[in-house]
Length: 226
Ligand SMILES: Nc1ncnc2c1ncn2[C@@H]1O[C@H](COP(=O)(O)OP(=O)(O)O)[C@@H](O)[C@H]1O
Ligand SMILES: [Mg+2]
Image (spheres, rainbow, N blue to C red):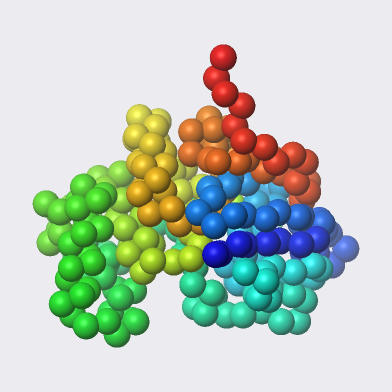
């Protein structure tokens, strides 16, 4: 069970409350979007979940174990989470296979296992033919698949994505959002997905948390299309 819980989570900079009393619980394997306009506190919330930002109020727990509270933050690398940023930041000097396998090398897995797991995940994201290419030789969509593969291959308990499609053009965005949902259905990793795009949230999520001015206003499954 990886139940991720945010309880009365808050972040202030001076007198400015950026995130204000956020309560949210994700069931294991659930995909939840934080949907809201620019500046409403989505990235700050996600970075608190990842352990990059210390909350000024409240707490974050996983399976009842404390991850974050004011003055006590478990380091990002000890949380079993993977994060994908808007600029997906894959290493230009490494091949696709090296990029994807890097997290496993860091974890000192045997090279035969690394090879096998990298091979499997490249197959899943349809990048097997590109394993020996460098990022500069890939399209934007392919680079984003590398970032996804690299995040998933380490088998994180939680996957965090911060507007991962905003650098892609419209066609590719549509393709990649179904890709993200397909990968989710395949691996069932508990996911928090930040976006300002309602259509994107509808297409990917089990539930959508609507954020406004640092607060969650509503949490619901996407309304069925009529
Ligand atoms: N380190 C900081 N110091 C002061 N204000 C910040 C800091 N980081 C973010 N903010 C402010 O917090 C608000 C929310 O930012 P952010 O979480 O990035 O929003 P979103 O991701 O929803 O666009 C913005 O108004 C931003 O300017
Ligand atoms: Mg943001």
